[in-house]
Length: 358
Image 1 (cartoon, rainbow, N blue to C red):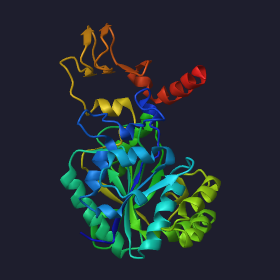
Image 2: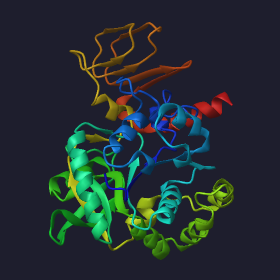
Image 3: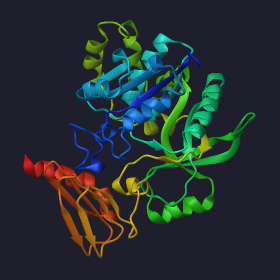
Image 4: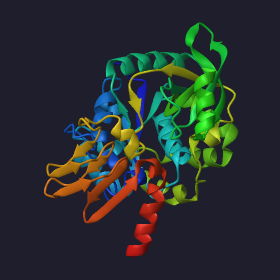
């Protein structure tokens, strides 16, 4: 296995669109939300162990979740859990990992992956990422993985690519535009055009290329983390991060770097990917009964009900009649009943409920 290949798992989110199952004290990446016997972060870690040495896998998360990482990831190296003192979006998160790894190994190549995605075709995923590692090791590019869209999904961002290829690489194309979650009409146009992909949020690059991109496009953040090279991998690293991280700009890597760089390419792929961003995306991966209900719970009785997602504790008895297209979730005394078509509002519902309780 190539000792220059590193993986960074982003695991600091709270998964608010999976409320009330996912809550701040136990976000969705630490839940066995698919009922497989493994949490999402455990699946991600195991998948990346097929690509990188275990000592080359880093987790960036909120300090609140360090113990959860240690509990669930038996082989993780404690010093490889990089703790954010506050939430500051993906650009500071990735900068911390990239500058530290570059400081450790000037020849490092990196994959950035979310902790809460699922990949059904893991062998195909491993093959593609190995190819991508070889590409970024030999080219000064920022590479993202685009997923061939199967439907006009409005919950994903989209990447438009051009006909320009990366030298002899037949599949890798130059990126033209990034578009955040579109409305239904625009998503249909994207699907019909044939040159748009879903933005998976997975990135590959050399540590050198991404740190240079920060220097060019996000100089303030570059200066902050560049000064940390005397502290990385020392007893003073935590003190340094606690001091500088809260002052970092709250901005995504997509907006800060990827949308503004002129060396961004995309690898179109299809390996059974889903970001599990909503209950609706989870529904597509669960077993359904004859009426297309996805039921998690041992004591659920359904009458004249179809196309529902039900997730309740096994000790709860639930009877539903005449309900179609609903999300019904109960967790720790909180009950959510919401139309599937309104699932994008769940984040707001959770905030309103927290305000009401407080």
